[in-house]
Amino acid sequence: MASFSNVKQLFDIQGRNYIVTGGAQGIGFAIVHALAQVGANVVALDIQTKPNADFDSVAKQFGVNIRYVQADVTDEKGLGAAFQTAFGILGTVHGLVTCAGIALEKAFEQTSWAECRRIQDVNVTGTYFSAQLVAEQFKKQGTGGSIVLIASITSHTVLPQHRMSAYGASKGAVRMLSQALAVELAGNGIRVNSISPGFIDTEMTQEVRNKNPVMVDIMNKTPPLKRIGTRDDLMGAAVYLLSDASSYTTAGDIAITGGLHVQMALDCQLAF
Image (cartoon, rainbow, N blue to C red; front, side):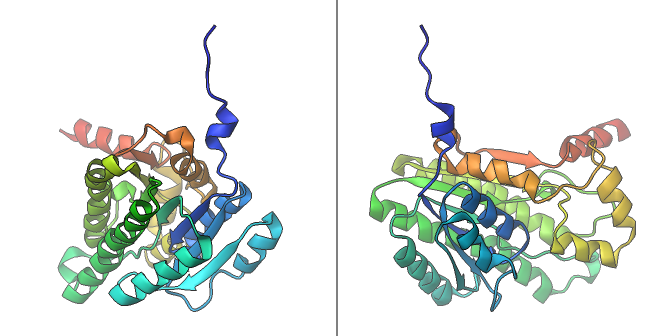
């Protein structure tokens, strides 16, 4: 008779400890909330002085340790100090999710050097060194661990009516970084994967919709599933990649786009 692992136990991360960058709002806060729901402890790092108004209630609601540490992922010394604070709070760390990121809706020809540099500094360099800091901690612990980088559908395709070349370039780099690190760190038992969200209803995409009203219809009607995604749509993938259920999954990318990344590729093929 075949013998299988207990699936519930594979997904169980109760009592484990995680760090989430960009955890004050948006996708980052959703990941913090998801981890708290399943009994994990989390330190959220973000540049904001204070996190989401609901942040402080999460720990009490789910009976876990949820802490906030202010950090700028583009500040080398500050980021290192913030991670050391997080390590001190959590003790053994089991995983990292890098959600810190910014976007810019602007024509390529009008994008300034400073604007492009800022996006790369936050989205790429901040992700790179956040991963480096936690990888060093995993090695110090001798435990291995899981790193999840938040990429984007723009690492797969170019979206309709989007003028976000600097952002797309940064997220393409994040997705490739996850693959490079997955290979390099595998010998240390460290898994690295990415999640590529499509149109997700967050503060960031709301800003895009405010600046370009045509994006409201595009975000709701273009995906094959005919709706904009919500932060809830990302929670399960994050828990999976941080749990033992994904113990043989590394260098992977989970595209959560309502099918849009495939639809755009198909449209491109049909155009030729």
